[in-house]
Image 1 (cartoon, rainbow, N blue to C red):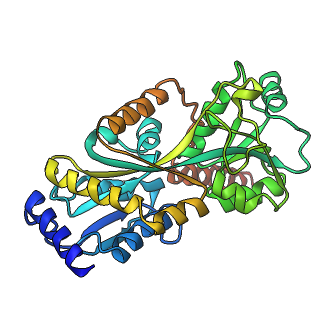
Image 2: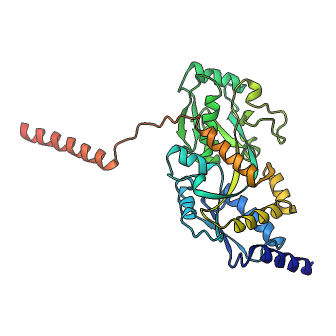
Image 3: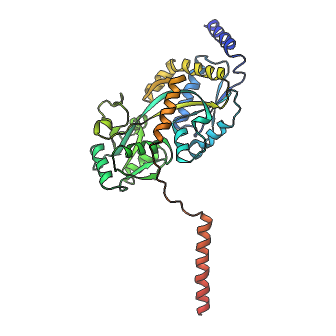
Length: 337
């Protein structure tokens, strides 16, 4: 076995030169312990256990601003293949929403690994028993149903695709944060509906919520009895994929090395078992298939119109106005004495 590993590394050195010559850092633009962090650590573990890379994989969590702080750090990293980024569809939505002035075109795409389905959920005491019924109400009473989401993030765009799936339907979106927070808001009656990944729904389904539909092209294998939005006459589809990115101008042979590394990891026992536990489809895309997916996801966003709430004045202006009003009130009272 040791001889096979040695031959493997000699062959890779012949193909790719002295790369990697130091640890490969993967920037995860979210906090440790979150879904994206767990996902990358699965690959880190599989690569280490199966001796797939002569250098260690190091994870660097740079959280904040919905992933844009970390993606910005990756954008400005040296294009030598030793620092890469793992970021899901948030790389598209942040640019489209205006939270970032960079996007997929500013990176070299490496691969897409894994697909997660999305589920539309309501509280178990909700008056709605089907997605179509809910969407008709959203059409007849626009902006009355409150959809809890993370504004500008992929789950927000799932909601926007859903809204577009029934002509005239309009939700009122509110910022609720991650999956656990959306669950609490849903159970507490503060929101009418929200979206979860299939893995999140599997975790939360016994906590007083029900699913009305999935947003896949076909039914989710984890929940074969759950109908899709399409089956309920709502023309909406969406899913979540994890993408790996390198800084622009990273040498193509190093991109190829990383593609090969991820491809080898995908067929390991560790990845297969973890993906099954996370209810993820074990897909991998590179090359033209990857470019087609990236173009398709970017194009899909062009059909979305963002209705942002009117921005409040800066806090210092509000304080200044209140102070001025108080001063005038005191001045008038003093003058009348």
